[in-house]
Structures are given as structure tokens and as C-alpha cells.
Length: 524
Image 1 (cartoon, helix red, strand yellow):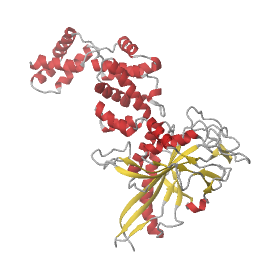
Image 2: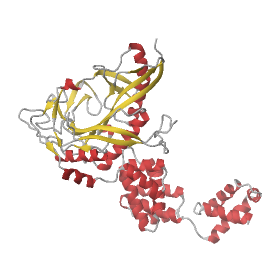
Image 3: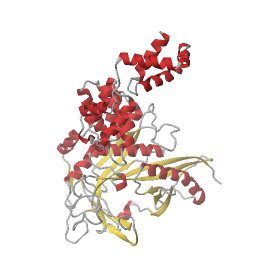
Image 4: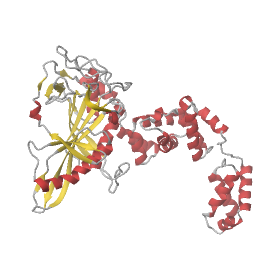
């Protein structure tokens, strides 16, 4: 009996990105993935083409092509000077035409790459994945990024979650512009895949090509997973590939890959099946059980009966268009991350969190601009603003609400940064002040109004040297043992005296300044 000496998981990714065009990719029907679109009932975003009615003809959405080129350039892809459309034949109830318009042999974007950070060892199972800052990023190859139309979906419960004895065919999503990014099988861990997916989502949101709400299917991840098994006799066998469909969270991506990495060696020991034609399997993910389940055997490319779409002309992509898109590219997350580290002195964890969230990054930049206008050096403004965003705004923000829409203007947050930089308020007061700003209509508040609010709430620290000296003397007189300990060199005792002085000050003094005055008084 063969014994497995080592098992290595191998993963390639397919990522489906719904482009945020106003209309669908080949029709004038409104797209549910577009910005400003509110969720409605089933079958509202449809027309004759979506329904596959006779005589309806597709017309290409030029904005979808432009968005796809932007993603391709951000992924270092070559842009095809000529691309064409193919029909991918299969029938599901959510695709009335019986085929999907896609791209087969001439994709719009190809041969790119993304540099993905290396996960740190011992990162644990919960929380964000730590990155090994000292390791060179791993280059993941991008095979292609092709443009196609999305399918609809089947609803197995009534809108609102009620039970029904039938399925509803909802064609709202059918025909939505869909960019599929396909990587080489360059991943060797679930953590690396998650870092790639997070980075790709950040890129696409920075480009403005997707709303990026994964719970609504704006990005769907499909890992192709198998294992290379090194046996005790030196032979290497490869298990059949499993494609896990339609994952819509980073947690599910990681869970599905780690489950398959554990199970595939055991399956091979049980059945001896190896990778080859006709062995690929499609599985779903059960989040409650933390396990994949069989859906169907996966088709090979020839099963789809690809052929050129007779209703669509090939698209000539001019170099002028490509360069126009290139000039319009914004600062991407990896560039913003580097800027935050160099300009604001942020740590790797803080810089990554703020650069990955396009809304938080733009918000921080606006805060720094306001704070600098009021005399705070940019580095101090960036550091303080980042701390308040990460430690306060992220904490009080409801799920899926960007900090930019929390109801606190960049000017208002900059006002808090200015007060902290001057030492006028404590860290705790800054936290409380932001909560008060939000509760009191901070959506229009200015930095000056925030300063007035802090004054009205009694948060401004007392800077009167005479008053502070009196509080110090009273604290020492009221705590003789602590004073004696400080004189004897026992530093922890200073905390008791500072606390007593702060209590006398009603919390409105600068604790660091009180500490310095106590040390001077007792130790000279």
C-alpha cells in the first residue's frame, strides 16, 4: 500500500467581476451591478435580448470594454489589438438563449501578473492574514481576463426568505457585464489565495469598475484545487481538480481550499483516481458544515461547443484607446500602501488596511489635506488620522457602510486631529468627540465647529500652569505613601499620583504634563 510522504496543495483561481456599467453588456437593460442601482424585485432588469426572444440582436457596451482594459492594465496584461466573441453553449433555466456570449481563443486581456505578499508563518485561523514583510512577493501569472455576460439565478425561496414549493427564475443579473480573471495554478496555500483575492478586489474598487459587494455577487471566487502527492517510493501523483463554485467571502475561499487540501489525499487513498480528462469535478461550499459537496462532473472546453458569435463583429482595440485608459488609471492600492508607509510612517498592517479600502484611503487623504491647512505637519496628520479611522471609525461603522458615508466629514475628523496635535484633548476625549460629532449631524460639520463642540462638552484640557501645580501638590499631600515610593525610585507609584491629580482636574489636564511635574517635584 502506498504511503503519502508529502502533500502539496495547488490552486488556480477564476474570479468573476460584475462590472458597474449602467446597462448590460449587450443590451440597454439596466444593470443591477451599476452604481446607484437599488435592489428590487425579480425580473425588473430585462428586455427582449435578456429573454432570448427571436429577432433581438446584441449591441456591445463600450464602457464595459474600457473597464475591462483598465483591469487588464492594472494586472500587467497585454491588451489584444483585435478581440472577438464566441457562443458558449449550455442550457440552464437562468439563461434563456441556451448559450452565453463569451470569449474563447482571443480574450481581451492576457499574459499578465500580480505580485502577492507572502503570508507570515503561524498566522492562525482567525482575523486578518499577517504578511511576511521581509519576504519577496510571489508573482502569480494571469492567464487571461475576458469579457462575457453573466447568467441569471434561481431563487429557491420567496423574496424575503419565505418557503415556496417551486423555484423562481430571476433574470435581473442575466446579461450583466462580467469580467473573468483566470490565474495560473501558482498558489500553494489558502492564505496566499485570500491575499490575492483581497488585493484584486482593492484594485477593482480603486478603478471604480465594481461596487465590490460580495454578498450581492459583485465578485465571485472559484478556486480550482488539487494536490501533488509525493509517495514514499518517490513517485508523484496528482489528484483530480475540484472547482468550488461561487464563493462570495474571503472566509469561504480559505475554508474551501483548506478543506480540499485535507480531503483530497484521503480520497486518492480510497479510490486511486488521478488528474486527467473527464475527472474534474464541480463542488459547492456549505458554510455551516465547513465542507464542500458534489454538484456535478465538470465539462471540458470542447463540451461547450464554442463557435464565433455571428451577431457580433470583432472589436478593434486601438493603441490610442489603450493609452487613454492607461492615463486615466488612479493610484492603485499597492502604490497607496507604499506612500502611506513613506509619507505618514504607518506600519505595514495599518497601511495595508487603509490602502485596501478605497473609501477609507480617499477619506484619509482628505483628512490630511484639511489638517495640513490648519498647520499640522503631513506626517503627524496622516498618523493621527489613520489611528482615528482604524480605531474609532471602523469600530462604530455599521457593516458595509464605508467610513466616508458614516456622517463625519473629513474636515470634522481633521478638526479632532488638530485638537489632538495641540494637546488640547486626550485620546479618550477624541474617541468620545467623534461619537458626539456623528450623533449631532457631523455630515456637514467643519473643524471649527468640532473645536466649539469639544469646548462645550468640557473636553478641552486645562493648560493653566498654576492650576496644574495646585493639583499636583494636592495629589502628593493626599497620597503620602505613593509620594514616598516615587522618591524611593519606584516608578509605578507615579501612576497613582497622576490618577489623583487627573481626578482633581476633572479629567481636563494633560496626563503626560502632570507626570512630568510630579517627577520634578519629588525627584528634582
